[in-house]
Image (cartoon, rainbow, N blue to C red):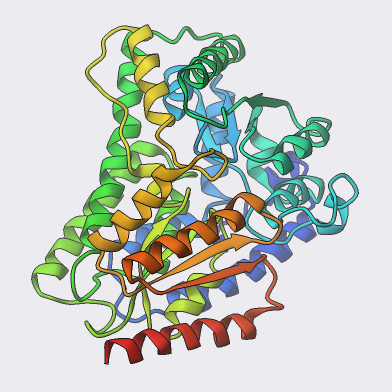
Length: 429
């Protein structure tokens, strides 16, 4: 995918160069078929295309240059890790590779075969030596959002510098106390790792930086309510995925510029599909790079995705941290409160998620919901049943899908998704 030769840098990071080259070759073709083949794409997407073309190249060089200047790199797998604290400690936070089948045979030596694809992916990327982000990390931060991750981290810690945050499973007062203690513990860990004190001035600036990125993505999501839809779901998924890798200030600027272009398209009533094309909400598990299979199938079946109710979507951007606080203690409280609003399926009960899906379906005027769960992901597979009941009550058709990262079920998915979209079309007629 990269046009610049970064082999010497990858060798320094101890990557398996032949395997890594093979991965980039496959992803480059995959990206061309799914993204660059789209007609009528926004000009602003050229920036995202460039970022993806150099996601293992120039961005990794930026990280290496930052490390040489004394900065630390923090790798994460989850939206529960507060980037505000990382930035306030003058460190860099990045998402880690976990969206493709990679090193599966090696991964299954330390995690069970019937582990979800996301977990096997981040383990496999490390063991196969093909993720330059993992190799660049001074610390990898996990979290207890599912039992599979918790147990995988125990084995993963033998291969990377590992730190795990305890995420509460309920939202009572005692659970908030636990979560605040975890945030304070993470703050101490960052200060020890970086040698930098998290001051009120640094934390206030970091909160605004991360909030600004959320505001840009909120703006983008609101524009998708337009008829006809001004941007494809595939492109918005890509934008959300890149937000976990790119420099936050640079990314925010690029997305606001893109939104200016989208607003012009909305005013002219220009879209990526006809107004009559079914509008779908994609709900459920996160989709890490390069997990683009299902949106590609949906939008190749004469429908358009107008919203993502997931961690790579509104779950990550819906709420802002209150910016009115001035002391570190008060800002920690604001961060604690904001992150506890996340409606992850790890919580019980999780009525907020049902309320948020219902609100999104109405606000985006969707014709149907496709609920996506990775195989062996029990939390989201269980919640699919509850989401289906609430959607039925609201009169919104829903299709529940469980899949993994392989292409083995591609034709089956095309058949099921196609039939669902055809059914929606017949209801409207």
